[in-house]
Amino acid sequence: MVVTTVEILEQLLDCKVQDWNTLLKIYLSNRDITLLPPEVDRWTSATTIYLSGNQLTFLPDAVSGWISARDIDLQGNQLTSLPDAVKEWSSATHIFLYRNQLTFLPDGVKGWSSATDISLFNNQLSSLPDGVSGWISATTIFLYNNQLTFIPDAVNGWSSATYIDLDGNQLTLLPDGVSGWTSATHIYLRLNQLTSLPDGVSGWSSATDIYLRDNQLTSLPDAVSRWSSVTNIYLDNNQLTFLPDGVSEWSSAIHIWLNDNQLTSLPDAVSGWTSATYIYLHGNQLTSLPDTVKNWSSATDISLCGNQLSSLPDGVRGWSSAINIYLSGNQLTSLPDAVSGWSSATDIHILGNQLTSLPDTVKNWSSVTNISLCGNQLNSLPDGVRGWSSAIYIYLSDNQLTSLPDAVSGWISATYIYLHGNQLTSLPDSVRGWTSATHLRLDDNQLTSLPDGVSWWTSATHIYLRGNPILFVDDDLCNKCKWLFYTDPFFSLKNKKNIQNRYACKIQKTYRRYNEKRNNAAVIIQRVYIDHFYRVHGPWYNKTLQAYLTFK
Figure 1 (cartoon, rainbow, N blue to C red):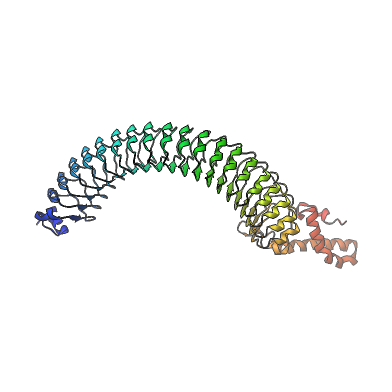
Figure 2 (cartoon, helix red, strand yellow):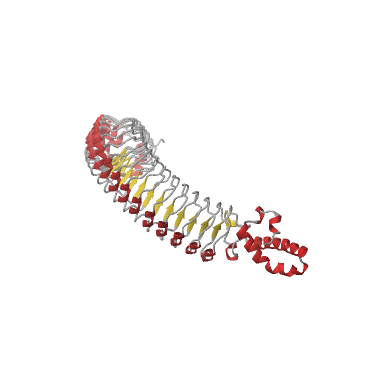
């Protein structure tokens, strides 16, 4: 006997078809159902209809009978279309049709006038009918990850929507109808192909979160001045070349993301960003900043990396709340005295610029824990570096430093001190203040010796000295000298003794030749001689044998 779909549903529902009109809740999710019979029009009393996770490819016109349904869940099927009969779902408040294969919607969706949650994401919709104007009660409309190339002006009917998500479509423009999104607090339009915004965005006056990143926007209309309630603005990864004066009204914005655009300058209007705590402008083409950036007094994170800034205005003094300041990868040749205002900063990154000196006002960076100034052209440090007493990470590698001031004694908290790739010929005895340092990179300099102050490096576990004309280090530092991740064999205590023995043989041979009676004396003085020699004349492998056999 052939079992019909009706009989299968009768078993699943434990209810005869003639009584289906009495069912209030229908739970048929994940039951491998491939089609619905016409008799489903008897589900007239059901307020909940769950059919998610089945294998339905279409719905019969009989779904017009679901007149009492409040919750209709058909997500996770294989539906490619909907019948116009869905217009009868006028009582439904929650309609879930996401993760299907829908390519279009019938105009009957206009009947979804009571729906508060409409989820159609992860389908293949390429357009929306004018019927979407009927979604007047919807507070949440999810249409992300479809293939929409445009949306109709009828979307102005979405006046109740608070969450509108159109991420991951192929939209190239928006209709003026978006002016009707007056209740929207969260608007998502990421990962589309928008090149411009209509003046209708002036209607987004209630929006607190506007996501427009990863589009192709080249400009913004002055209508963005109406975004006075916005707290989070995401416009990164576009092609913006300038900002309108209307951005001055973003006075409520806390997060402003404009990184990875093509901005060459900022208007004075950025003075209005008085509440912003995160201002991200990295990856643009900014050549200068207006002095009005002084009003960014609430900002805790300011990112301007990867621009073309050659100088900073005195207005940066106003960044008194900034904790993280990122200026790496610019063309800065100097810093203004105004950087004294960065007294709250814990992380200051200015690596990869063209700085030749630092102002003495860096002494006010007393809260900083991470200072990165690598890859500049610094040839000296000011006494103001004494103020870096809280710094844990001090990165000054790949500069042109030939010496360090006594003020480095103030680096009492530093655990990582990187000075490799400079031209240091000596270290001041004040390095004794580096008592907390665990990692010291001094490799690739021109050091011929280390001062007595290194005996205070009791916390050091990794000392890098390769690429310097140093032959020996004190015994207690030998096993702390590293190369890559291992103990440096050259500076090991074992190698030190081998080299000393080599010296001793040469010295003894010389003494025997000139005075047999002084043979024992050579053994006695060998250590003093060797220590003196490497400090004064440099490493043995850079000297001729004659130099070693000359006594003065």
